[in-house]
Length: 111
Length: 113
Image (cartoon, rainbow over all chains, first blue to last red; front, side, top):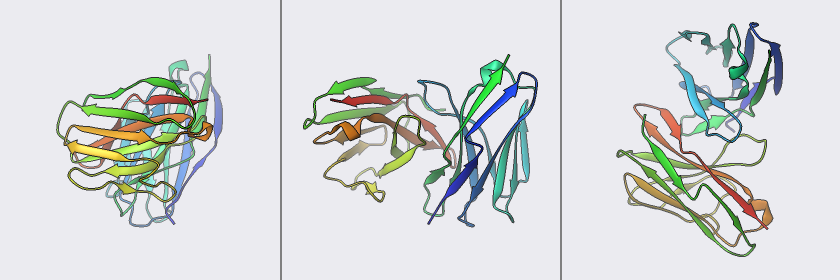
C-alpha cells in the first residue's frame, strides 16, 4: 500500500550546523511532496513543498530535493537556529488525492 | 492561506459520551479533511469531508464511530461517538487550497476519562 518512510526519528545538531531529513515513498504516481513543521502544542505548518517536475527548491535556509527515480526526497536546513527545533513531517500526495505522512523527525538545535 | 478555526480547542470527556468538533474556514474550499494525531505520533487521515455527500473514510475508521457533516464549503463537523480512553488524541481538520497545498486548523485536544 501507500507508505512514506522518514529518517531519522530524532536529530540533534549544534546551532549553525546543517540538518538533513530523508523520506522515501512507495507510490510512483505521487507528484506533490510537502514538508510540515510542528512546534510543541501547535498545528503542523507548511514550510516548503516540491512537485515532481522539479528536482530542487530553495527558500532561504530551507531546501528540498527530489529524486523521482529513487523515490526519495529530503529536507535540508542550513545554519540551524534554536527556533528550528520542532518535529518535521514529510508527506507525499498519492494518486487517490490524499497526503501520506512520514513518521516525523524531532529536531533539536543546541545553542 | 485560509484562516481555519476549530472548536473546542480542548475538552475532557467521560467514556461513553460523544463530542462534536467544529471546523470553520474563512473562504470556500472544495476539500476538507479530518486527521487524528495521537501523542508523539504522526498524522493519520480519518476521512475526507465531501460537501453534499457522505464522507470518504480511511481504513480503520467507520461512520458510526466518526460521523462527519459538511453542510457547505466553509464548515465541517467531526463527532467522536461512544468515546473510550483510546480516543484521547488531537483531532485536526485541514483544507486544500491552490493546487495540492493543505493547511491545518489549530486542533482539538481530547482527553477521555
